[in-house]
Image (cartoon, rainbow, N blue to C red; front, top):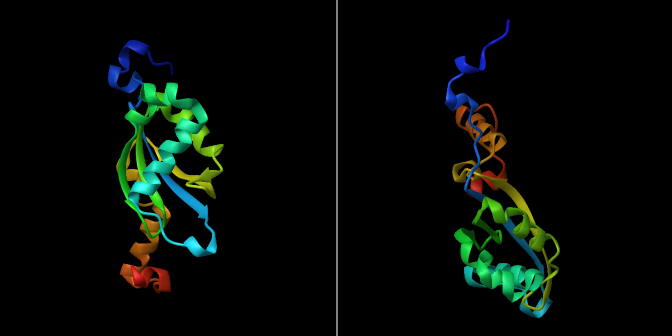
Length: 149
């Protein structure tokens, strides 16, 4: 059975092209022993902007990529932040993060944990949701990590 294309509503035919993407980024720093501390939001932000400017130079970074990055949130316990970036700049930012190996004089690496066009999907994975649900129903015991949060 063949369906005519005029019978399909326009909403079904439309492709979704998001304007922004959200990245959950972890900065793993190998600090010297005398300086072993957790990062706070400003050093994380500065390290991220430094990664972009060192990769692209001040011309492109100053021309807008750094200006278009929006820092949504940061967790200093896990050194993880959520950044909103225009979809057109996603590959440029990801490439800069992948090739960066130093932040504030220390060896580091960036791990892009998740990328999505929808901010709520960064809240939890389906595995985390169902694990929490099983604990609430009494089907499974909470682990020590879950009990502490």
